[in-house]
Image (cartoon, rainbow, N blue to C red; front, side, top):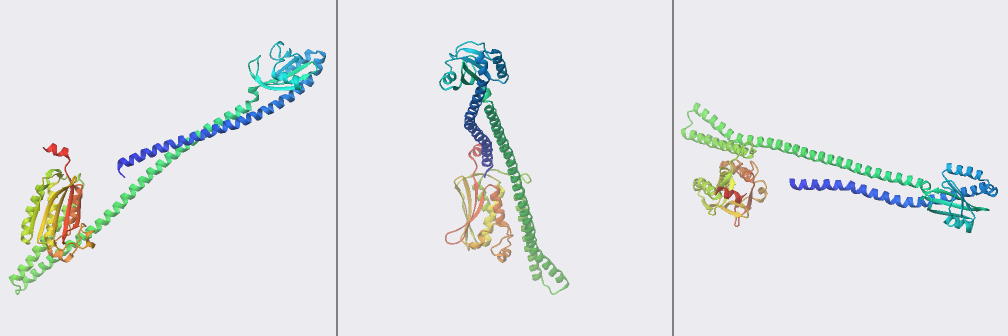
Length: 457
């Protein structure tokens, strides 16, 4: 996953995690509102029934208490009973048989109430109950009227008082829902922060694990590399020391002739040259693998066809000495931003590898384009490389035929250097078969961008 894709995925995850708590809180609040509406509606009906029964019982008691005062016309007792009702928050109204107001705890005794629903029902059935808006006070109230010998006794309670428990319950449920929704939101936000922290810690652990694995691989590679270099250096040194010992013995032994000394000196020269080549390749590979900050490479627009022809020209004497024809096909001009010296070194290594080990009579070097990439190919028609060796051919110190490689003076680093030069230029090195036998080594690199070419022009 690229950095841009990772940032996009992280942003989408943040949005999702931000919407999730809001959605959950909204669903929870909607559920609370639904429960509030459904349950309080039933609760309100129940409270209304209870209040109606309670007011009916109170009205019956009031009728019994006022029956005698109404019969005797004792208005003092009626007023005292009305004061008690007022103190209890209940409105008392005494009406005549036609419906005229005899006494009322809230307003002066006046007006005709005979057509009020509860009074009309009490006239028919002896008792009437109604929830309605008072025409006198304008307040919604619960009324209950009972018929007596000389008129009607009516009690009224404001609906706000009747349904106060419902309103308190509704407010409590609503507040509980809001608190629950806020709690859910805070919980999800907390979980989001916690998960984000866990993800960050997991990423950090992954980074640390990768760094540790890289350190282990680097340490393993260092040990293996030191072991390989030591082994490679020890072989020529052993030959040199053996030849020197023989020369020293020859100085004490007059029987050693000049021919033997020349043979020993040739051995020393050959092994010294091999040792020098090995040190040079090791240093070259180390320099290529260093970061640009440590060893800046000279990248600049260059003509690849010129680099190929110059590298082939430097390798022609070596090919001629081995009796191998060097064929060059690099006539198409191609521009590439590269380190010309390193690219030339990679080409020389491939040609030298073909000259040393291929057993071919001809080695060809070609340059062609494939889309936005340039491909440099070195091809031979020799013995080829067995399939079991192909996956390791670009590894350091790897040899297909170790005895023959040492005999030819190879260091085992040439193809590894080629691979790292290709990687340094954003390309790759590859091996493929040739029809009829042989090998085809290629180096592919991205071509110079158009704006670079214009800048150079």
